[in-house]
Length: 125
Image (cartoon, rainbow, N blue to C red; front, side):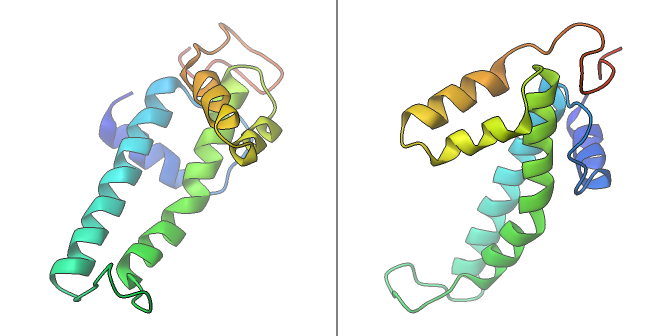
């Protein structure tokens, strides 16, 4: 799956937490997520006058971008965990300091199960 197809798929499945997502789908969408947040931060600082040194300043465009992409990125991560035959509840590891993030990263990097699993058919088939 390529960059554009991954973005299209993840946005079409905006809040779909069922099914599976291939590694390429998840990581291409994650790259898109980072690029959007970087672009909104640059626009916030360059055009909208956001000053990170000012504690009362709010990067409004970045907040809107984050809110718009939070749900599809969460759904893609959970579908990615499903591809490795793990429950989406494993995503709660993000709340465990240091170790949780590392374990979750390993889960997201693992190859998906070949063929069907309890979460659906193989997305690469």
